[in-house]
Image 1 (cartoon, rainbow, N blue to C red):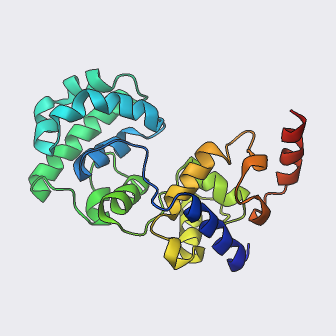
Image 2 (image 1 turned 120 degrees about the vertical axis):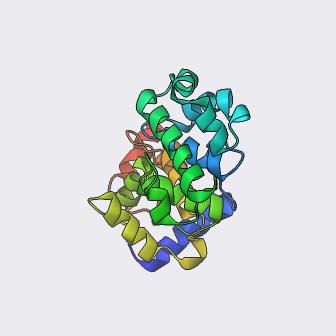
Image 3 (image 1 turned 120 degrees about the horizontal axis):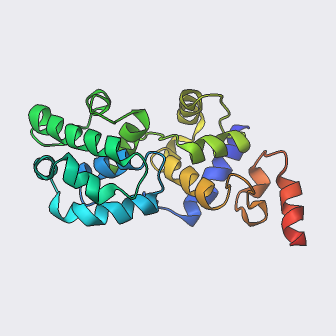
Length: 218
């Protein structure tokens, strides 16, 4: 895909949603960190339902440590891998207290050193909490980047590197949100809604016209 197409794609997505936000609910950087940690292999909707049960009483790492693993498990047992996530969340909170005075660090290495926090989680926190231009490549972003030929790659790392390189600078701050939302609601996994896609004409998905034709027959 050439630079002109990328420019038009991001300009179109930006015009439709100038200030995109994560769909995870949180009140501060610490709660964002915990919400993202809990969201692995789980929908944002399910995470929000779970965090509404305990976020009102855990606004700080100290409060989550005091709550403890067992009590946290009871609050989040509706989401996948809840036992391991509860253990990591409390351990991460403990580390924040011990090493960072209870504050979420604005530093990739420090974030990735926290239990349960990988590169994707760190990228979300850096972008959403601290305004850094990062790409959190989840399944949606990976699919969209490859399907549209926006930044094709065989691994998450390759796609992230290409998106950082090829995304027009003026769109970097919000680009990963636009791609997540596009993948979640339009460029979906099984039957992409090509007939409803705002960037259809610039997309290089080989089957986009076929998908549009199928939609017209329904």
